[in-house]
Image 1: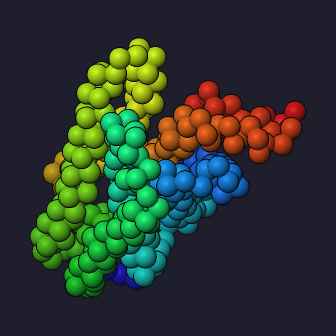
Image 2: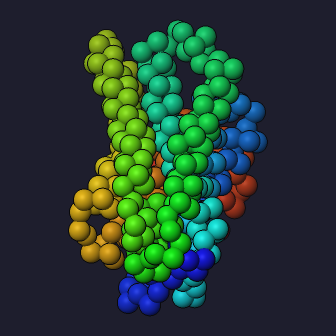
Length: 314
């Protein structure tokens, strides 16, 4: 790879920046407000909200990692990035994506224990278990992503088809496709990681919610069933992000999609979950809504019923 690459220069599609920028701003507001609420709310210092803090922190970083460069491309035509910067961005981008998937899996387990074994919830989800789970989330992501930059560096630096990445950020397969030499090892390893993360996590999350659904249907009270279903139904919406992830992964390797369409979907895949997660896991949580009402100043009105945080200045 050359030390300088043109990232999608001279695109005739500035409109792509509108949805990307909108989701980016909403994501920053959502995750920033919720992190502040969890930090300042003493009643929220529980294992359940430790998972949420991890999720919101990862989503915040996942939004910031590509968008700083992406907005530079859209707004200032700053379409160049150095090799080292590209590898660093790739490492953090894929690491945060894997961490996010792992935390969503942990949250599905948290909901399973809370609904299927409510009397044992506090004995199962102890502080030590939650901390160990957080460390495992970090270690798994680093272990899986760390080989990617080294696999890229082994490719001959002087043999490139082009120096333009068909992406607004340094995605592994987008960079690998620039090489003229064999990229079989990169493709195989990238596919294995994708199947391990997206495939395995998706299966486990689906299994957890199937068990939750079975337990909810067995509840004698109609109100209890409705409350449990309303809590979990919103969480299942997150599974849409896995569909987008699988589509992006498979089209990069086997499909032929128009570059502009692929780039739009890739940006949507990165920004949609960080924008949606705070609404699903934050606004729908009663303790957080109560903390918002306690902490909000008089001139700040945040509606938990809206599709996002609505800030109204009177």
